[in-house]
Length: 421
Image 1 (spheres, rainbow, N blue to C red):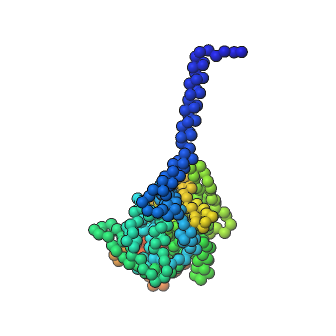
Image 2: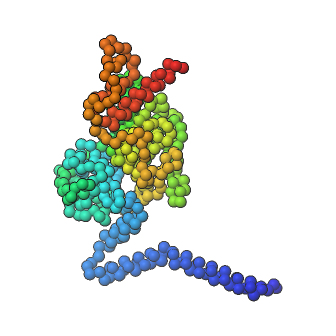
Image 3: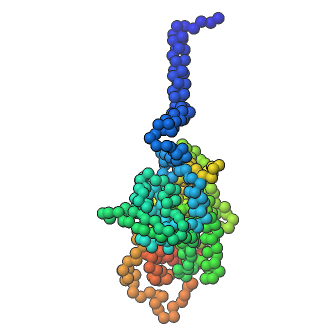
């Protein structure tokens, strides 16, 4: 039998002691020990609190608190709030009509929905909702706030707004109304140039976008450019964002998602079939363009498929997985972050436009450096069938005007290259 040297015995004893300490530390860090503490606290609350305890309310509060400690977008949705979330993806609900998010621990308006009670009341992007019907929103998650603002048609809700530059809270009483989000609106704004406003990524948005472009082509002839307007679009379904991007991309990564420690979760790539690949595209964004809007803008920008114009987007680049629970409730858990094709995270960074245009207000008439007389002013001039910057002159929306003028320049450049080949 071989005997250990005293030094070896001492070393072995030290190793065993370290292993025991490590095992003890792991045991202490076990979540089951914390559950034991939780059970003990719950028991003491039930037995000794000065008032009788509503066990359901206490458990709901515990779940809310646990998820709120993670990030602003993870939450537990009771059955009624889970139904509201499902209504949102369908694009039909009854309420005041505004998209909200938690920003810097404050309930913040991302964008009022066009033609909604919120927009008619003058609510703006960036407004902070301090109170809903007298209740402070300081400890409120998004779903609870949305639930309070939703309700039967014709009923009223009072909100208190904290607005930058205003000394006091602004109190507004809004009448709830049916809100139907018309996800796609389109119009031909110049010869061959289609302006498509995509307001939200509800189910079927990509199909409606494709149909809008097809209809414009059928009714107005060849399309020489598309302005994809994502201003004020707060996002929606990720798979619709992938489909919208795929309309204009024939290859390459659209978006990838990465989970804990940067581990790849999913990567979505463009498919060649059905791609509208030969039309120049400009994507318009603003500070209220968020989530799915940023996926599209980032994908088309990184792939070189589109020029992004406007101001920096909102920067909501996290993925929430919705998990239905057996009692009809739902868990909304942040499970990953979005990354653009170049590997850049959208979260808290947003999409920076290629062309910065900060205002929707048009400059004064005549404030240009263009000559007074142009070829198009001459009687009997020949029409080359291409859009011209003059076509955009009547557009009041300055950002849209800049987008159309840029597309006009691209169309002329492409025609010049075609003729010189």
